[in-house]
Image 1 (tube, rainbow, N blue to C red):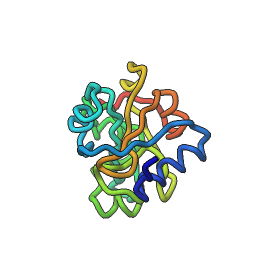
Image 2 (tube, rainbow, N blue to C red):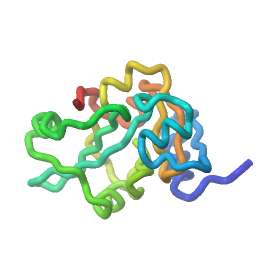
Image 3 (tube, rainbow, N blue to C red):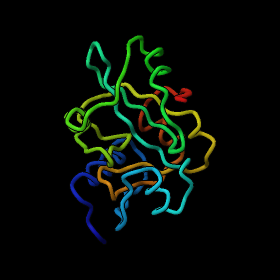
Image 4 (cartoon, one colour):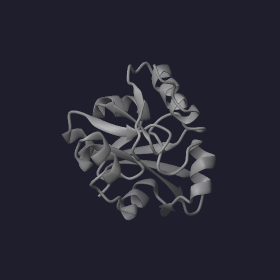
Length: 158
């Protein structure tokens, strides 16, 4: 049995703490982008649940959007929902807020609680895949598992 890297193990521990029997796997090929992840895993790009961290322009609060890999997040739609403009977070803010680097940000296990929005399009799939702490770690889950784990609002992000 292989051991997980520290970041991937943190995600595995977070999943277990949430009562989910999901398993993190580390792969030899990169899963940094949704396209790379889909190619490595052997699923469609739409089945990749990409975690994107934004920052509110005025209050500097983190906002996590978990989107289907085929969708581009419409920042205006999210800004309207929360009542202030957002912008994509820089790598330092991502690491400080989540504890993970861009390309491996999971939907769970963050350093702090983050207001989360989940793309409704992910619910068109029976199974999806999410990053698990590194650009080589992922885990398979259902959209319902994601909703339980991320405790977010299901919205249209397009």
